[in-house]
Image (tube, rainbow, N blue to C red; front, side):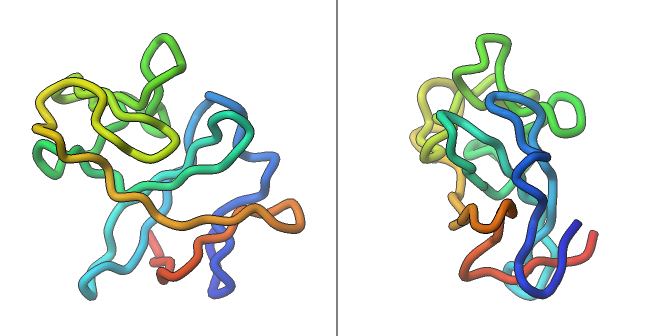
Length: 120
């Protein structure tokens, strides 16, 4: 669910360390895939692009966490990223992290700040 107010989803749609919510943002005039996960009680959003090459991370739609539930993993390269800030922990990302998108949880909704949501 996306709308012009920046609502990505309801807070209840995002479970701790669980399946992420995919959405699109307008970046450089184009629709770009992004995702949202909950980690340590907080929502965190990123562009859905590996720091190594711009391929989507999820190994199945909406599945971004590794088996430990501690890191975000690129299904293509196995690179691991911090779900708090997108920092590259290990792998072929050559120090390039994920692009963090600002979000806020308010009134039982998670909103994207400073960017425009795009239709899928």
